[in-house]
Length: 179
Image (cartoon, rainbow, N blue to C red; front, side, top):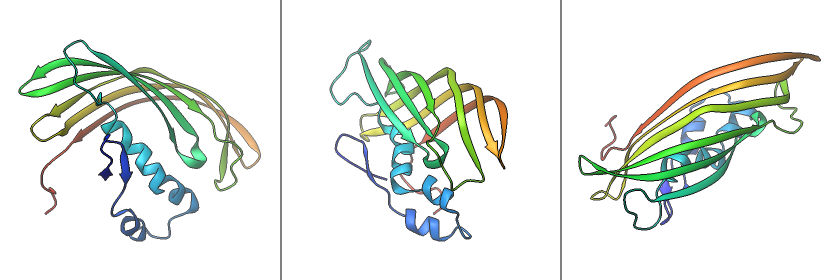
């Protein structure tokens, strides 16, 4: 991932090679793995930085829409607070509000999402920023999603209740661990 000076994703290197390794990827998978979709999915890892000097207790906000092509999109509103330092790392806490939007009519899937009412009942995390390296070195974000979906498959509509617990942990390293 190549970042702009404001630490938003500019471009992704290696995406085309990755997609070529997939065995006959579907149009849906290609939409989910488009460069734009991958940039949007990676943005939350970097967007928590304030872009200016802060002191303990300072707060700031960010909003973003993350599109998942034929599967709909999420609107994320994040509230950050600078919590000071720990082990020579700057600690940033985040509380998030997530709202799902169903896709418009999609014909590339064997099913369609007709309606959805999904919400995050808990969404929070912590970023650890290393000033010496000039980057986030660790990020943990937890969220619980709950709600209902109306899905149509083969002309029949089905109601689905969803309850999901998710924990995302990202660690930035100096060297590729696979080398």
